[in-house]
Amino acid sequence: TRAKSNGDGTYTIDGQKMWLTNGGSSTLVATLVRTDEGADKPHRNLTAFLIEKPTGFGEVAPGLTIPGKLDKLGYKGIDTTELIFDGYQAEATDILGEAPGQGFFQMMDGVEVGRVNVSARACGVGIRAFELAVRYAQQRSTFGKPIAEHQAIAFQLAEMATKVEAAHLMMVNAARMKDSGERNDVAAGMAKYFASEVCAEVTQQSFRIHGGYGYSKEYEIERLMRDAPFLLIGEGTSEIQKNIISKRLL
Image (cartoon, rainbow, N blue to C red):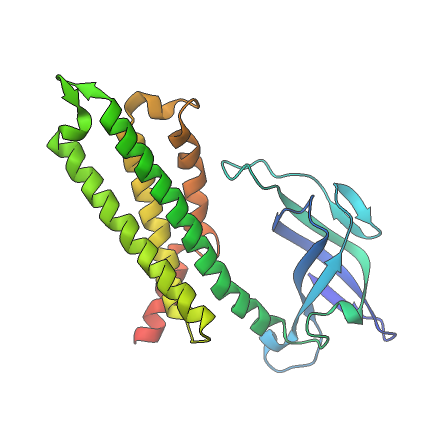
C-alpha cells in the first residue's frame, strides 16, 4: 500500500490490506503505508495513517472499500475484513505523529504490545479449556468411577495445570516489563510463543478428554478448538518468535 504526496497537504493512498480486525464496525483504522521520503533505509519510508471512516461494508467512503467479512475457522466474535484503497484522499494531519517516516518504529512498539495481548488471549483460551477438562473428567464415569480418578487422565490434568500456570506467569511478566518502560521484545516473544503453543496443546488435550462429545457443537471445547489455532499465528508465528529470541541470545 502506497501513499503519494499531492504537494498540497494531502496524500493519495492506493493498495490493499488483509486481516483488518473489526473492519466493518470500526470508525478509525490505523494503516501502515509506504511513502517516498527518499530515505536510504526502506524502513524509514514507512508512515502510519489514522483513517476515519463510517461503519458498514462496501465503499464506505470515496476510494475506501470494505468488501465484506472473511469466513474464518474460529474467532467468530469479531469481524475480519479486507481494506481496499483506490485513490483515497488523506490529509497530512491524518499521519500518526504528524510526521511521515515514523511508521516502522510505531509499528514495532505496537507489535510488542500485540504479542503480550495475544499471549493473554492464549492464556484465557488455555485456562478455559483446562477448566472444561477438569469438569468433564469429574462428571464422566467409566469402570465405576469418574475418569478423573484414572491415573492417565489425572496426570494429563496435572501437566495441563502446570503449563497454563507457567504461560500465565510469563505473560504477566512481559506485561509488567512493558508497563515499566523496560525493553520487552524478548519477554513478549517468549510469552507469545510459549502461551500460544501451550494453548493449542492444552485445548487439544481437553478435546481428547471429552472424547466424542468434544466433536459436538453442543460442547464449548469444540469452539475453543477452532479459536486456538489463530493464536499460533497472530502477531507472528512461533518460528518468528524463536528467531527474535535467538538473535538476542547469540
